[in-house]
Amino acid sequence: MSISRIPTGIKELDAILDGGYPSQQGILVSGPPGSGKSILATHFLYKSCKDGKKCVLMLTQVNVESFLEQAESIGLDFRPCIEKGTLEITKAFETRTNKIYNAERHGARIGFLEKDCVQSVQDIPEDVEIVVIDNLDMLSLYHSKEEFADKFFTINDILYAKKCTTLFLVGQEEKGIKQAIAQHTSFGNIELYMDRDTVTGRGMRQMYIPKMRCTYLSLEPLNFKITKEGIKIERIFQRDEIINDALDALI
Ligand SMILES: Nc1ncnc2c1ncn2[C@@H]1O[C@H](COP(=O)(O)OP(=O)(O)OP(=O)(O)O)[C@@H](O)[C@H]1O
Ligand SMILES: [Mg+2]
View (cartoon, helix red, strand yellow):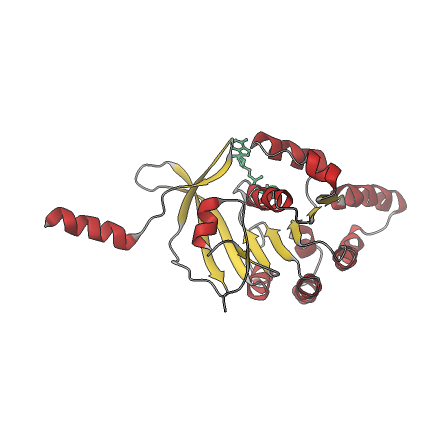
């Protein structure tokens, strides 16, 4: 029996993933700053809202306005979704900056601020189907590897029990054991890169999917661009195809 899928909001990616992200599972999206993690998640949220699914976006690093502005710059207007109630954006960023301000005034340690993240996930209403956590860096920064493992495992488990399909976004500054724990715990991993072609010196964006349970993966890196319409995955590099073309040319 094949598992059900939720469209990613990007047609070419749906084709690669048998129709989309495996439903009711947690997928880890990692990559350095500017690599396209938030844009990838924006496509997913927009498509899900349009399909009438109830979505929650937990923003920990940027404010709501800045998320809405970047979405609008790729032609996706979330304001009607927010008005209709299909998208709820939790103000984790604003809450945290307020707490930091107050903690500093009262001389408290700032580390305690991230301790309630499990509660925030627990508070997600039962009718929510789609969750994006943008991002996990603060959770990682303020916890030891054991605490991070416990918290991430618990968050995953809560969201699984709530039957949510979740994207966890994580930066790549934390490349060590915590990232490995998150990769291991998640149902799937998508890695985004920015690289320079050694021959031409030109920069390029790449997406690599090393893990997606229940899904055939070619393990070929995908080239993509970010345009004013968002992520455009370019023609998929197929080694077999290139070899066949070369053989055809010889015959
Ligand atoms: N309207 C647009 N047109 C073209 N490119 C855009 C547009 N909006 C964003 N981008 C590109 O997308 C990049 C930002 O992508 P995104 O915000 O998804 O990165 P990120 O991986 O989430 O980064 P961070 O870790 O800093 O949050 C920008 O640096 C820019 O190159
Ligand atoms: Mg981002």
